[in-house]
Length: 269
Image 1 (cartoon, helix red, strand yellow):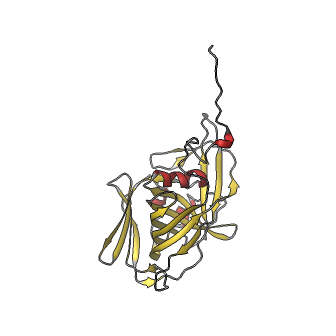
Image 2 (spheres, one colour):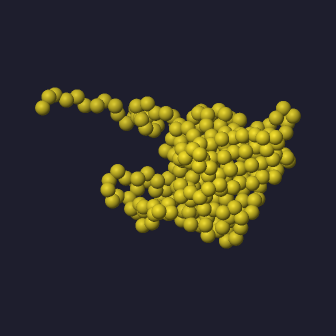
Image 3 (tube, one colour):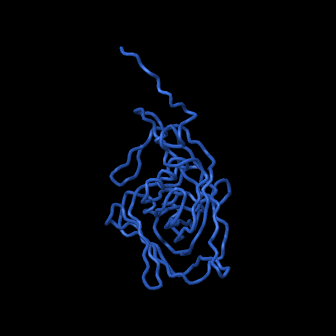
């Protein structure tokens, strides 16, 4: 055998994420400025929400609420892109949080930033913002041409700022070995630092008004589409700044071999 030379690239020099020799992002925090955001909160079926909510998170017995948020990132330290976010309002040890099941995104660095450090379940999609008269519209397609979700709002009343609930994700990293359980399976909480942009007149640039969100076609690609819109609670639009800091592991689940999705997209053991 010919003489061999050992690799010299040692762990203390690895980048924050893969490829570690040329990572697309560095360590948190990440900064987002002038984010255009539309959010739709609605009442949904408690049973439907409970079916995709990880154990340890709690729902009210009645009047469970879910939300769909569209974000347009004009500038961030991880790029410019659009998102469609699907969440469930719930509780962790009595604290109000939002569990984010799925996020659709149209930029690979935005996907990596949320998925790898924090466990946000991000997938690629086609996401657009449009304006017509006094209406603002956002929608997501996956694949392009198959409209999955649409939100429409007519901004009217100034939005009164309030506290934002922490985000909770289920971070799962599978094992490369056959029959082995995930190497990581844990609930993660992230407390984003969020503020509404203030205009030159001293008033916030955020509004509520009439609006609604609709799921436009059946899909097995995202179980949040199975959370029916029973009653709209609030539709809003505005501009925000926020910072994404490090998160915190809330709970580690015992190892268990992954299930496989059936024809309806439902994981079965």
